[in-house]
Amino acid sequence: MGLAKLLSGFILLLIGVNLIAVIGTSVAGNIQLSDSGDEVLAIASSLGQTANDDVVDLTYFGNKTVNTTTNARASDVNFTRAGVVTVNGTAWNDGGTYNVTYSFEADLYVADSRARSIMPLITIFFALGILAIAVMVGVDGFKGMGFLN
Image (tube, rainbow, N blue to C red; front, side, top):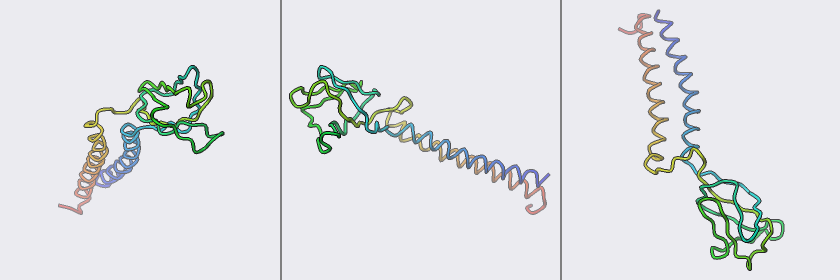
């Protein structure tokens, strides 16, 4: 009976360690902004639409095939949270395609800053709970085998 409890505690510990990685990755994905990578944006009538909404930062706007060093100035290129990009037609050729890189809030992103600061604690408390249960079952197993009083 003691050996069965000891093995149960060990198996519980192994399962818990694997779940910690899954939960930690899920939590990390929900509290970090996503990066668009290098998206190609078509501009028509000085307007373009990004593939994602909830845009919070436009980090690059330019044409990498023509000029890799061109970065947009704030007065020439504007964006809205909905992902609409507006360009100054005199500074940029209207009707062209441009490369754009931006940060956005993914669908599962937690917008509340207080909740984002508390979410990593979920992983820590889960790990501590699994460890405590595994230790309790293991100690009970050692008691059943006569190693502990």
